[in-house]
Amino acid sequence: MTHKAIVLDLDGTTLTEFNTVNDTLTEYVKELRERGVLVFIATGRTLKEARDVLPSDFHVDGTVTANGMSAFLGEDQISGHALSSDLVEKLAVKAGEWGIYYEIHPNDGGRIALKTDRSFMTKAATQPKPETVHENEWLSRQEAVQSKIHWTDELQTENVAKIYFFSRDKQAMEQWKAELEQVKERIAFTTASSTHHNVEVTVDGVSKATGITQLLDRFNLKKEEIMAVGDGENDLPLFKLVGHCVAMKNATGFVKEQADEVTEFSYKEDGLYHFLKKTFG
Image 1 (cartoon, rainbow, N blue to C red):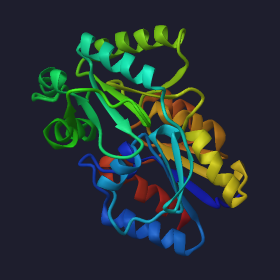
Image 2: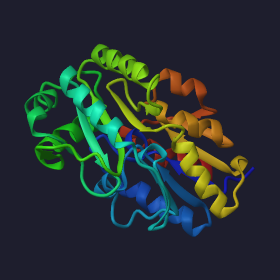
Image 3: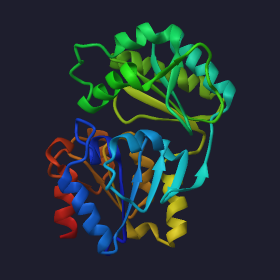
């Protein structure tokens, strides 16, 4: 069956290791849309984060942000969710106590963290880079502590799309994830990871798949007509939804096992462009 639409993850898929998009991919996505193929983005990033890295001429038909917390048809928001204020405060304070790097991402505006946590969070993003941390995630953390995070005296807990957590230490992150699972027993929420060094918290029952479903309904598309490309565990709900799912070469073994196909090249090698060109001609 011909794919009428493709859903693209950003980090580790559409973006390079420098959080940019190659001109070859930008031009080819433009060509696909001119040929009638719908192009959607489904990312763990908020809308502001996505706009910060995508070229001004990289246009798509719909966008799902913050792992499904919001969905946009062009520039118009068609669905949105927010975490409870109590949960945001509880997890941010607990992360500070554990020494876990965190970012609170409002649905509108830039990310925030407490001034009192600035020192250890900056240290978490200081060289040398651990070998297992992906270049793009490391670059994002360095940019965040230097210029992206708004350091505040009090937490902003209203209208929060997600909380992002990071650790240089994989074992420390696994312990933090286990702690989040215990908190889940008292307060319902969803967790999703794109690498072994991070985890994001969003509203219970929300995922990239629930966000994309909003867009499919608007375009009257069947899941069999959709192809999705991604590299992280947060893409797995999407993989279960669509008719054909593709893992990037740089994806973990677990993600590759869930995919119908794996790209020949990684995100560092313009892998998405090569795959789409081979698939659509």
